[in-house]
Image (tube, rainbow, N blue to C red; front, side, top):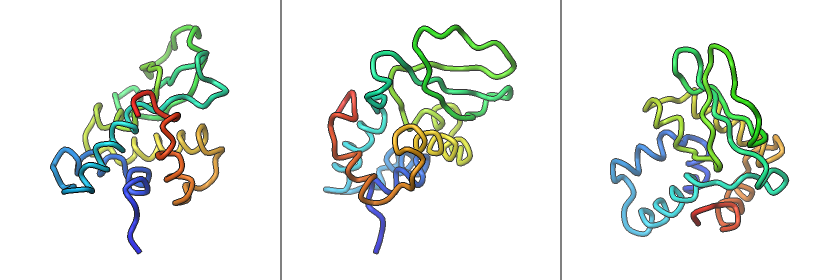
Length: 141
């Protein structure tokens, strides 16, 4: 049996957003993909960090996406060879905005996501679908 769109998004966000940009999804699948993309671009922080933390994206010294952390909003700026970008919500398309076809960057994004939103547990079909079905998880449901 094939994967659902939420599973595809989690497995390969770069491909999902590429396919969306290319108009690869048709009919009801296109409508579902648009809704999923809107949600994936505005993921609220877990309730324990909501309001006090932000997403800190790390870029390597050569400008490639490295990972993200959740840090306190008032934490001072990073000093060093890598740079950071802070956002109030998680945007799963962020690595693609830096460099299209960034499979490693997207893999690192999903590794951090698994840690912060899924307690480091596997991305099962049921967990992924339940996460994307819950409007409370998104700033722009």
